[in-house]
Image (cartoon, rainbow, N blue to C red; front, side):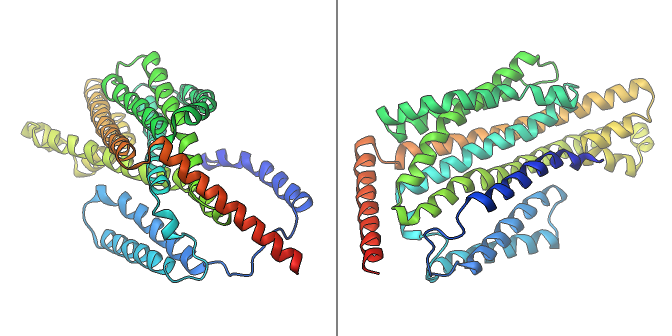
Length: 371
């Protein structure tokens, strides 16, 4: 077995789902004759994949590979949107997506879920590298995030019903922002398990509050004929947001970490600098694990100083990454409060979509009866 074996536990579940799907789900249900936009799908995959890989090359400085990746991403994404204006059955109905209750919810959801994934991604490294948790303990301290999300989501539905999606999204984003502030201010090398649990719980609660209105808005902003698009965007806010934010926050961490040591090396006394080989310096700057490996070959006092410096560098990088997530969360908050429709306008628009959906269903039933 290797580290990737952790993903193998999903295989039995996947087999069960496939077997049940083949036995229970109908082979044909409400299918349409219009073709799937395969070209748009390929362009979107190329664009997003190259964008994420390009972001991950940023810590290494500008290179031809980076330029190619960002160039291909820009071209593919531009062609994707061009394709959506001309495809007979586009993956994204740009006119429907331009409705504020749809695109604002999509942006807010992407930032919110992306921040959640980024917080977990960096938090797991921080608790293991800096706080010295083993893998099991690092996983257990994230449980308050999941529990808070699970407990708060049903309550968020009641708030949406009484106060509207705009208010609920704003409250959720404020809670997420508070969680990141706690992470930035308290997650140091001396942090106790209590503040780790607290910060995770706050972020989870905020995401739980945001998740319900975001998903509701994405689905309710479209007629039933475009339900697939709404469902796809609900998943997209999680998958795309998580992939992008993990790449961005991980890149910020790597850049700040490397800069910390480059400045430290530049200020070393000449004798100490001469004793540090280029290979060891590159290993230290490259990653926290590289610094640990070099420290293992040093005398105890020097090893302790190097480990302490690595902890400080990692903590600073983590904090800058969390500040970035905080800023994006606040931008989403301003966007929601500024652009998302107020409760009465939102409900009037959603009723219009319901009426349109009923009309579509009636027309489809009449057509089926005539056939």
